[in-house]
Structures are given as structure tokens and as C-alpha cells.
Length: 201
Image 1 (cartoon, one colour):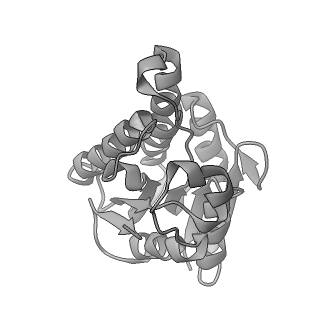
Image 2 (cartoon, one colour):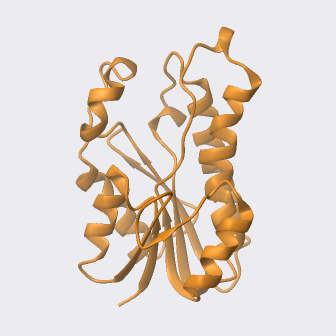
């Protein structure tokens, strides 16, 4: 049984990932405002404090991150920064701090998204952030010490989220959070590193 931290465990995807992992592992659920522990992933000091409290772990999963949807011609720099600060650097902050707390042979599993491969109108911020996350994972995979692995899951839109996001994802076939969660199991329990696991593309 491994000790796995799920950051974003109170969200739709995070709940599904936690439920799947709990079958075989000790899962520590972390949210922004709820969960066993709380963290502000955009604040490196908050992330460092979280890992100091948790101590050594075998795996870290992040299912977090806001991006800004809106038309590019009207997008402000501050709006574009939303995705960079939250979804991109929020997850990178976790890796930079967490690498010192993950046991030998442990793993990180981050979350990007289908807009890395399939841009949509008003989704430039999301496409940028998702591709940057995939680039970070490929770069980090060859440098992380002590056999620590890192992968990223790229899910399509979730069935559970279609009510809010349907206008952006016409023609995309949604997947359930439970199905998307299987890719996180492949990363946590598998042997590969530097991989992008695409779900439902």
C-alpha cells in the first residue's frame, strides 16, 4: 500500500481519482478549502508547508487548475495570467516543492487537457497552459532524481461538467470522471515516465 496525495481531491475529477486509488492505497485528500488538508497551490510557501506537514509520500496527483475562457481579441494580460498562475504554476509549484518529499521510485501525475491538441474558440489560454504542462513533464522526466517518475493525464471534457462547458465543446464526446481516473492509476501504479496519457481524444 502506497501513500498517495491527491491535490484537488474535492473536485469532480479528484473525487473519482481518490475513489479509485483508495481500493489499494492510503489516500490523503487535499483541497483548496475542503479535504483533510488545504493548500493554495499558487503560493509556493503554502505548498511547502503542506509537504512539511505530510512528510514522506509515495505519489502526488494534481487535478487542479483554473484557466480563462474568453475571446482573444478582448483578453487582458491579467486574464491570460489566470491559467499561467493557477493551472500551470500551481502544478509546477507542487512538483518543485514535492520532489524533496516523494520517496525513491515515487511519482507525480499532473493534469492537462484535450485543448492541448484540439483548440477551440475562446480557449487560447487553456491550449497554452495544457501544452506548457506537457512540455514541463517531458523536461522534468529526464531530471527528477532517485527514480521519481512524472506523467500528465490529458482528459477530454467530463460528462459531469458538460452542463457548464457544453457550449465550448460541441462535437466532443465526453467521458465520465471514473473513466478518466483510470489513466491516473496507470501513471501512479505503472512504470513509465514523461508520458502524456490522453483520455477520450
